[in-house]
Image 1 (cartoon, rainbow, N blue to C red):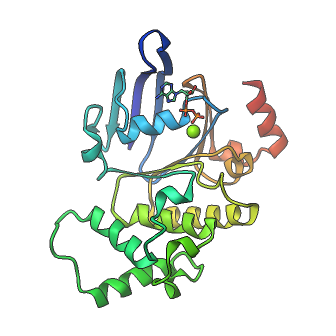
Image 2: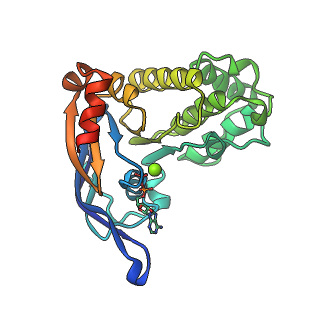
Length: 250
Ligand SMILES: Nc1ncnc2c1ncn2[C@@H]1O[C@H](COP(=O)(O)OP(=O)(O)O)[C@@H](O)[C@H]1O
Ligand SMILES: [Mg+2]
């Protein structure tokens, strides 16, 4: 379980300081898929930075699996938190092959260093993982990532993010840079992987149709604080027009 209590984050220097997260409370249970929506500048990505430890909070507490991680350094939190961002180029290295990317992601997650299994076994394992995506990447492992489409790269980014075990997966507008068809397939794939592996995940999205269709909870962020939360049952009965009007009235 992830729990944030009264989180305050102030960014900017000297007299340009602004409170970006304002006594924010939030919680996600193990295995839950939580979705966050909110207008541009609401503080969504800042919230992820606070969870991953890339910024320090000014006050409040962050708990993960019963452990107080409020002041845990980012490099130590990396074992606990994985993140995929909007730009598929950030999640993968384009001048490396799919295999090299996977090996890199795998090594990064190794807890016991050293014993990297044999290359034959490694290729077989990576192919098995890639076949989970169901988009044929397992037959292209020697191909450079720069030859893949945005959707394929984003699917690979997600797979790489979950290669190492972590307590929570953060997805920040992962389909925002994709065309509509890739958006749908990456979203389906993401949902399927989360459910199959019972991962705990928080996803930020600007796409209200996704917010209705996917996830166990839906949170509205405004001016650095959550102002509404819908459970799965309530939100999945809403039409897009209804959810849009709720979104506009807040
Ligand atoms: N390093 C920073 N210094 C000052 N202000 C920042 C910094 N990073 C983000 N902000 C501001 O914080 C607000 C929230 O940003 P962000 O969390 O990226 O919003 P969102 O992801 O919801 O669009 C924005 O107004 C942004 O300009
Ligand atoms: Mg953002």
